[in-house]
Length: 144
Image (cartoon, rainbow, N blue to C red; front, top):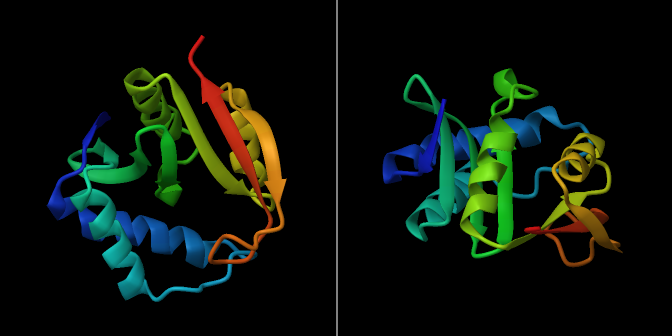
């Protein structure tokens, strides 16, 4: 597996990874169309915010961040629990001194992952400021 900057040609697969996660997550409402998610993926790549993890040349996960603000970290279903998310996060940590992100309160797996990776919970919200209107948690990480 390699982690590298996303290419424009990766945007469709990044959009599929995101849409796939939404479709398979029972508590996650679909508030955008798949076409909207493809456009969002393209925007993340066009801004230069996105790194992808590749296996055999195919993106299997991505992390999008603007400086220290992580906007997205998603993995294809077949690679979860195999170190792909950690590899993406380690690259982001190597490139900045601090990271901040939100995850939904319903996403217990993500919460365990971020705590294991050295993040600290700093706030909880009622979800009024996210598109899905789901309660979320803000996590922060600082380099030692």
